[in-house]
Amino acid sequence: MKVFAENRKARNSYEFLEFFEAGIVLTGPETKSIRNGGVSIIDAFGSVEDEQAVIREMNIEPYKYAELIDYDPKIPRKLLLHKKEIKRLIGLISTKGLTLIATKVFEQNGFIKIELALAKGKKNIDKRKKITEKRLKKEIKDFK
Image (tube, rainbow, N blue to C red):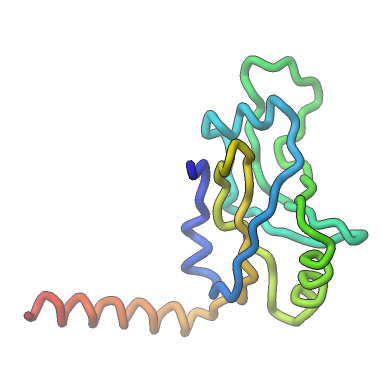
């Protein structure tokens, strides 16, 4: 499994509750661009519209050898999920405070897939607590 992009910033800002794996509908040049490392998922999030799962704000750079006219790197892209999973996501996302965040883009058996996490936003207090806990663990480890 080769990882093309990872959203490490999301671990600090969100608490992950559950993970989902989905395929992405892509064109040929987009696939080649992703394999060359031309993808960014820092601001990417998932949504469900008309009973179809969609990834938004995922930036795929244009492939330099393709002649693309009017290419939009942040166009919403369809996600390939089972209907049961989509219906479950609709119920989970409708819960207040929960969202779908893109955490990883990777290749599995020749297919490019995305890992989405059902996430709840952390508050500044939670972030500070985590930092102090980390610092205390480090001090205890250094003391021994």
